[in-house]
Image (tube, rainbow, N blue to C red; front, side, top):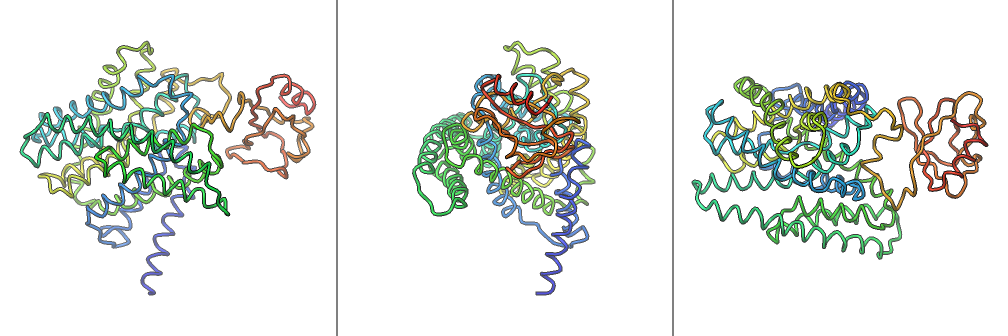
Length: 486
């Protein structure tokens, strides 16, 4: 019992350390999730923790469980109003773009690294998807407002390309286990699983929203439990019906996030926090599964593939996919750079381990190294690259996250920014005393580097930025004049 308590204290201390320094880390452009991988490695058998974990099957199960909720949270946070404007290019990036990436990586790995063509295609399938969590943690932490329509395009692509990468990975593994036979059969299975996943996702999404709106529970705290249960049900049910469970979960969540839904704000906040927990769980688990001593044998070929993916393959996939759309050259270059690999790729790599594919260890270690270098290098350079390419909207002073969580049912009208400067009557007042007009609603307060969800008792301080929404400009102007806000 004492040894278990020591282990819990050790693990908790490392995780709290990572969380405590998350602001400093993300300001450098590196997603804090990367450090949870390192935390897992520190806890592992070759680290200070000495925890021996070499169960790829367990890691794969944990990864699938976590991905279900990570993708569900991404779907809930997808605004249909923003997404429909970039639906076709976003859908092409998350399907055709994924396939082009997988093929180019496969060919490059075959000729540059000496892998068989099928092993190369497996590597390409696994790293063909981008990581939404890493991208948006950097954008939000650095308050990056991108020029329209880059934010919704990147959101839609990174949130929805996991299902295609998952299907490619499963298909290639199946082909390798059957000695390459039945290609057209697997191609048909690929299309059918996407179609079934999409169809059932829509059906379950509307049914889930209807259930949440109609059910009457004694405690508000049970609604997130119902929604979480719906997510797991959709994933498992779609899989049982031979559909793509990840796609089904994403579409169901997007439907639920864009219809009238009771307690929607609290549900979105719950899944935002819960997805962070799932991401931490999967990163720590994958960190435990990695043996650092084995990385020495693959670091050079993995670095070659990582560079090829960043500077050649991802740009080629983006430019080919978006060739029919009138996006400026610099916009395409920025989309090419925002191709961070992350947890999904490493989870998919565990499938090869569990299926006993030849060279699966090498592929897993390469994917781990590629994902790590991608997040660190591309993540840290995201802001400078956006600035260099002129893709930051300096005139847009609204919240960077507005494009990701713009719920029309909850936020009526346009979002505005008001500042409480020296001399403003609002300084020192409680929110409840400011007497907002009925058409004006305060969403949150930006204070220095932090944000505050205001209550009626929240006191306004000098320098605070109030984010308010209204559909009536005259009411906003009257409020500004009365309280001397700017």
